[in-house]
Image 1 (tube, rainbow, N blue to C red):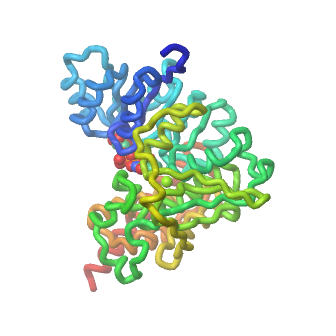
Image 2 (cartoon, rainbow, N blue to C red):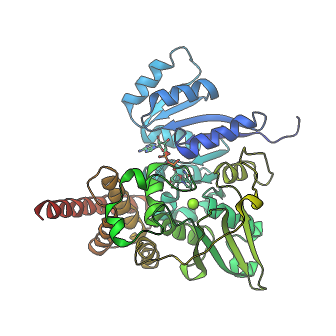
Image 3 (cartoon, rainbow, N blue to C red):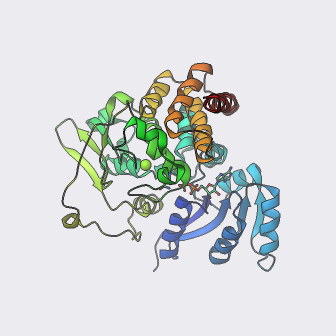
Length: 402
Ligand code: NAD
Ligand code: MG
């Protein structure tokens, strides 16, 4: 086919759930998408397999050891250059040859390369919500300055994006929007009592009823911190405030979010819970391409349900709204404390119900500064991690003593 625009991609976090779904869309459209670079943390065998299939010009591993192992494994493929560390990530995020960067590293580790892609003015497909939560204004100012094309991949934000006029996504009053209805599945423990939440295991938390995702976001979905991070993400992406956003728990995960207009119209985007839909939407935008997602069968579904979120059992949503309102480095502190608490829960060191306790304590004990530089934000991240870790250890000692 001639005349099809070809996009050249760097995929940050290629071995993860979003990365592999992105590569599946690439695989379906070899005439439209080329892979320039793939990156991963330490999964060498998985990266070798992906490099053999997609033949990127560059592969980046998080550390020098993993990079050396990958280099050895690919010794017969001289065309793949193997790099490592933050410098390698920044290089492929901003390379001249690349027009599109999929930002799909999980957590704060994705901030620097995602910002590098923004500063280089790329089309940035944003899955890594933690990067935007941490650096909000700094990130959006860089988007405006560089002319980067920021497209949301998080299914809710992609849905909202699709329900807004393309030239007004940061001018909701001008677009006639009354509010955003952000949907949430409610996670695997939606109907659990507080007592039951104390007993849940990492395996149960990682088994999401509708979506198959990485471990960290699965736990975030179970605590509702994922919705809290998404509330902050929506405020920055659509230039609005938590007052204009109402979370609706919708356990079927078919309506991915809605926009309500002043004339009473409510526009929604629906689809099977499959991340290839928002990924393909961002990759091909403003065109549409086949993604591999199952067509929606509304007859088989029959009905939809909606509930208000319960911030008594799931305080993370309230904590995130408070951190956004506090401003400055508060969302970075919230994010860092959450990352520490989630990894302690996954390691069996912290009970599920104590995740919000650690976050609330950390927000109370770390002082909020202006978030006007990358270094300042990373310093807040480091202080919050130390403080959260100390609190986790204190709770562990207390539970041993009782
Ligand atoms: P995942 O754990 O499956 O994959 C994470 C990827 O990041 C892997 O490739 C891993 O190698 C890489 N990585 C991890 N730590 C790294 C480090 N320190 N340095 C370099 N690379 C590192 O996670 P995921 O579920 O694919 O989520 C990725 C991001 O997308 C998260 O921010 C998540 O919130 C967001 N997101 C995911 C989904 C989903 O359905 N999985 C939906 C919406 C948003
Ligand atoms: Mg989401």
